[in-house]
Length: 224
Length: 250
Ligand SMILES: Nc1ncnc2c1ncn2[C@@H]1O[C@H](COP(=O)(O)OP(=O)(O)OP(=O)(O)O)[C@@H](O)[C@H]1O
Ligand SMILES: [Mg+2]
Image (cartoon, rainbow over all chains, first blue to last red; front, top):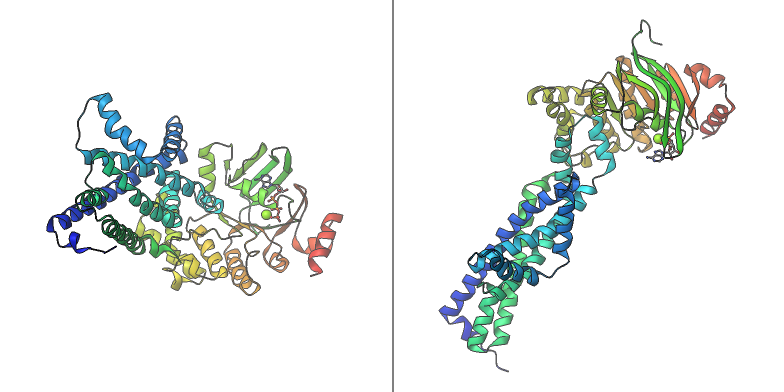
């Protein structure tokens, strides 16, 4: 077989599609990563403080998200809910909502286990110093959890980024969608998907680098 | 008893404490006056830690009365808070907050408990860090210090709350031998300043030097309560005799 990468690379149209697709994938991943993380924080905090009722709702939510396929969640949110409630959103909004919900379940589980694994000695010292529950949570449990769980949170985020390709199934023109489109026009499957693979790897490494940079400049300074 | 002392700082009457159906404290009666220094010793599992942890509400007792600096511990959050305001505690494993600098470890409680503003807390922390002779480590993280230094920071952290009573639970047991002295020296200097303290330790020389009374526990009971000279020379109970023989034999 003859490799003909130039069939893709010399076409400004295809390059533009890939570029736009990459921006969409990265933008949606980062936005849902941030929103999902904030939601996860609330979910995990509710469980940690055993807030009546919300505690159980949060636990059920986390279990439900982590035990159903992303694509099913996506279809439910993109096709099921709008039918049920009669609203019309652009595709990317469905994707943002679905990814946020999906990410939040995974992040919440990591944060929850981090909160729960705070060392007993730390809590006893804090209690002996008469720190309020709020101070103990904000100044001891949260920072220690973020430090301890950073590697898990980071690799979970990268993994979730790599699963975002399924949003092309509901018509979002992301990076995977760009590949599928160019493939259908050129039949250069090998070249197209090699290109896609390289881009996903590059972006995954880039996201990981950014997270590590942010960590090193903030909580990373607090690790002896 | 130290000269002129008459205020009672700790009073325990008929205190009983169970962990499920295991009784960890049995009918403990104990009165400690302000300025007194008590060393608690006894075999492993005899209830030494439980005793002092009951004094700041880290463990709740099930019957009997405990009052500390005039506040009775009734098991409600308010009395526990009030007591902890007056009691500092130092743990075997230091329990410093690893993500906070030495200085932040010392200022966290005073600032967040509304005791003082940031500047006053900083000044206080530096005063006590000088006291324990590590002001130059103020901006380091605990993990960058030796065990002996960490324990001295833990002492400074507790002192920043201006406690009336200090509790020590085997403060030197987790230290390498060459670091034990620096921590004991810090405690001796605290003793010389008249701090009331209860110290669980097996450092018998320290006990001889600073303790007014030695309390020996066995199976949840206080079986001896004597000045060190008497305790070491003529322990009353066979259990204490055996304990001293074992400890002095190495
Ligand atoms: N949280 C707990 N749950 C159940 N049992 C406990 C608990 N804490 C202590 N105990 C038991 O209570 C008894 C007294 O424990 P404590 O820690 O007070 O002993 P100690 O005299 O301090 O011993 P050591 O010298 O080993 O520190 C022990 O038998 C211990 O197993
Ligand atoms: Mg103990």
